[in-house]
Image (cartoon, rainbow, N blue to C red; front, top):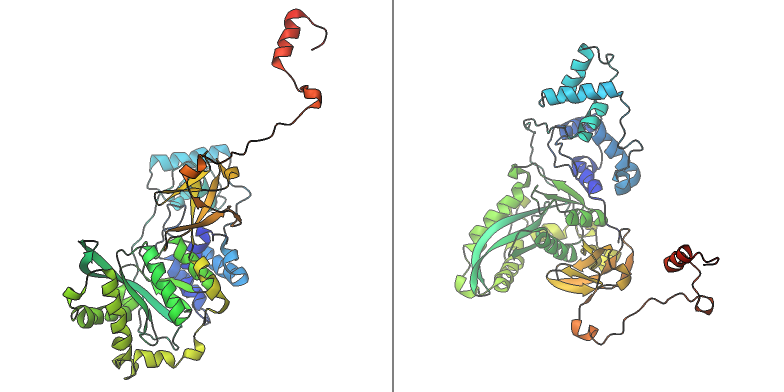
Length: 440
């Protein structure tokens, strides 16, 4: 399965507030695009923090036409070239070096005032590309602007899930106390916890594990709302959501009110579950999770919820069962969707390393870079793929002892007529030059 370009995943995450809407009112596209252009982003492969309105709008229409394929970066035909006259290039670089805080607009106005260029003849993009080539571009920043926030609820169960992590207690694990983290996914319309589990970390791998179980138990949501933490920004999670047709939406940093219902669930969990927990019964992570899951199914999901008009989360969720997106044919491929791909260089002995272990791959790949396909949840290596996502072989644990009796493959020599070499020979050439033989 071909990996999805990280820049395309980033662009899709920027478009979240647009593509997650079923329809846009008149003038709403420009308003949302304007708001998105005012935000700061961690742009892959760039030191900039802001995007232009035309750029975002172009991505939106490209996604509508071609889906994720429309967001793939297209290389410029003039990449690495600057068409500005040499004198203008030197003037731009000098203006920036003279005052590194000068913006592109200030540089353009300075050159126009000095008569170096005609008014309006110098584009911002030309200046930007030149400064970038010279390593003189500077990160610009601006203060965050307030965004209007309003309470809302999804119309149907399965429309929106929320994901977040809560810091949990310290429990005994392998003979010592370890802090645990509660990773949860909640359905917005019903307040049902599609899956939740205590984990030893809050990494992307922990979040993916909880998401996989939620999909198996509760079907596929249409939108997944998460915060801006590094774990949720992982390319693997973004790729999984793209392949499942789930819109991954990021809340504004430092704005927990965007997931108020999940924050309320955390408080309920602390008060009613952790507050009632008997520590003497907890001897490890399995004990803690077993009690969490029993409490969820027997207590939380069956307790009337004031925000649901007295209905229980389970009853509200079951009310929309006909609308829930089933996994369907994807169920058989679910394990494959959650596989990771890590780049590895194949050693000269035909092995690669993963999680401290060594694995043998086809010897023809020695010296090349490959994509190692792994199941990180099971710590298992599945196989090897090329850059296009095509399978090119297996990866098996290295058995150095067995290799001691293994017959090596040796390249065959190309025979020549009567064993006589037909190509150039330095020894015979030297002999001819020294003794003056007529034939070599």
